Amino acid sequence: MKPRTLRDALLEIRQENEEVFSEKYVVDHLFEDAKYFLEAAKEYEKTNVLISRRYVRATVISAFAGLEALVNTFCHIMSEHGDLELHERAFVQEQRIELSDAGYFEIRGQRFSSLDEKIKFLYWHFQGLSISPQDSIWKAFVNAKRLRNNIVHPRPGKISYSAQTVTAARVCLIAVFRVAKLFGWGENTSRTRPEN
Image 1 (spheres, rainbow, N blue to C red):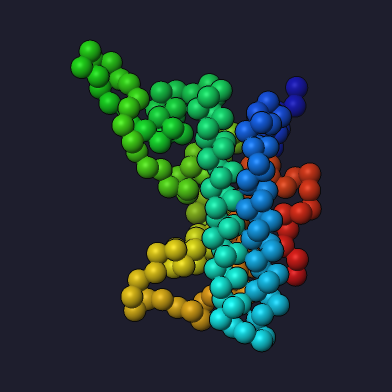
Image 2 (cartoon, rainbow, N blue to C red; image 1 turned 45 degrees about the vertical axis):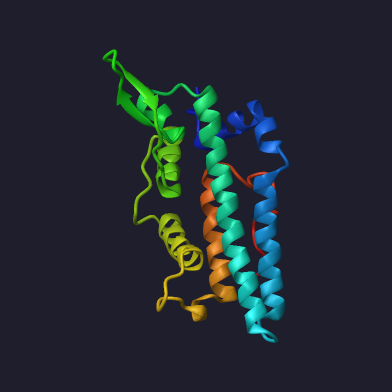
């Protein structure tokens, strides 16, 4: 029997839970928005750098919103239908495990999990492998996340508009799409690849 791949497992989950993925196609729309904004940023790159940077920021934010929506959808599906240990269920539900007054462990309270943590967990859960910090996909993602963080969490004296370029946005979008592809996104469509 052929071993089950990550792509096979995720496609099976997607098919079983199509209503979650089809709910207004939010992931697809956010990724399409990111590509649209990148094209708009290219249009203004030579004529109005301020408008171009506005679209660069929209590209990066939309790309990460799409990836987070995709990852959160998988976490939701796993929490509802996955065969998970208590600690894994708590993780995908972003909750803590606490000892109850009766002496058993239960899930309750809140625990924030970063996008990185969720990606690493999902990949390990489905693939049985960890993502190496030296992996080119992961390195590109970390660099893209740095750009996103600089845009979303600006700090006085640390804001760099010069880094908000069309090239940086394109590299960011490709990095996000490559991570999404790890989870089977875009396998049946070429729409998720930004144009040159």
